[in-house]
Image: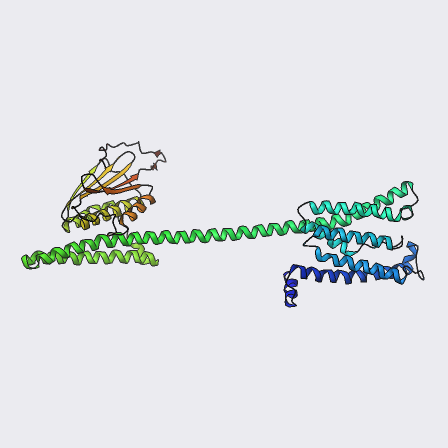
Length: 443
């Protein structure tokens, strides 16, 4: 079918109506040739079985021209088979009845156009309507043949009359309904294939959307990693550099110590950046570097103290295991909160508290903010609070950050405690090992 369409398109026939016109022309040529063959057969030796035979003039010249004109007109109606398939079927049946009226009683000719029109009704008419139309035109054709031909056509009467009438009806039903059923089958199959193509395209679009969303989420994760690493270490380097600048003349030894810390922190920053960039590139070398966990929190606090911050750390409740993603979230939020405290509350004490309760872990980082200092949610620090909130949401937790009535800045992360399965296969919930918690701090 596609090859035929390409061939017609090469000849300049590119529309459905143009293809139907070509089909109508081919059916007209085939119908004329078929009718002339039937007429020749009736006028030959085999025609004696139908009441004709050699030497019998089946049709006069005028009758033959009229029959061929009707056959060609029937075929021309096929141009309407897509735009108005039921009207096309009706016109073709009218032509078929005219043929039966023009032909002698011993000549029966079913024009090929009737089959094509019935097929088109099944293929292009609304569902089931084409079948009903095919059955209706079969009955109408049989009745019109009876009305035009009368008893001379069907027989003398009685059982023979009824048998011939029933035979004509069954023949018409088989012709029209059979072609219409084939057309409806083709239409159903075409509809299913079109629906399948739509589903495939939709699935492809959904897959592309999921892939694009995954890329955006991965980019966001990498951006958070870069921000956390750079903000923490670079803010420490800035503080250490400021201290070294003040101590160069007054205390050169302490200034050198500050410079050594700057160098060490710079190397650590480069290592962490290489890790994140390696993950972004997908290099295998980066896979060997572990992500931070809660075991690295003491070192993180020591780094903050080494940078000049006064950090008070406390833990309440009985610690329980967190997943690697949860531990990384707690570490990064603490890292970002310490960086913000160092940036906006230089020289002020920072209070870090971890509370392990029956429903979850609560991390609170609180520091005083000097009067007139820019709050961390302002334009200065960029997307720090947003990044912390996104990290908390990824593990099902919540994050609240803001100024308290006493002028202090507080970051509060809550990581829910999920049910876990122990090594014996028993599922334990958060209430299996309750731990005392301190009352919440007023915000």
